[in-house]
Image (tube, rainbow, N blue to C red; front, side, top):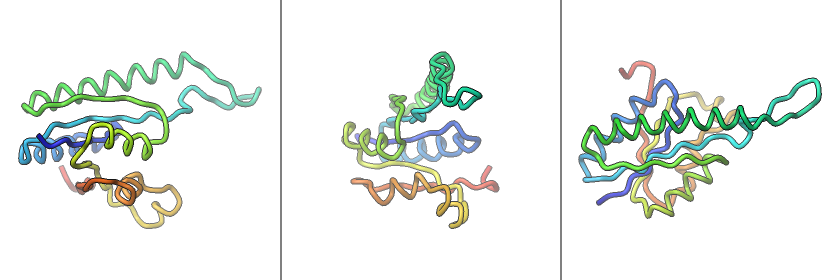
Length: 148
């Protein structure tokens, strides 16, 4: 069986990414290892008293993200593709690459939103960072506004 890492961010193009990953998994008899990396600073806010940490905000956000991740896993399983998931907090690139090693992955499937080079310079591109540092091939699916 081919092990496929599928990072998701719950963005508006996640559905297109899932469909592409499922199609690929079926072609190669793959198992999808779904991963979502939440930022480490979810519960922090800046107010009149400076930085404050609100653990209940973090707990609620993580709980909601886990519900979303479970729904995606169930959707993938409904396509008759084996799947399991992980939710971790931290730096997305590092966590995804670590998960790739842990699961002895054969591929990583990610989306490319087709943003400009200027966007990448100022914001950075997770897909670009993964591609540059991945020990396994990265399948980059075009996820653009005109893809429905």
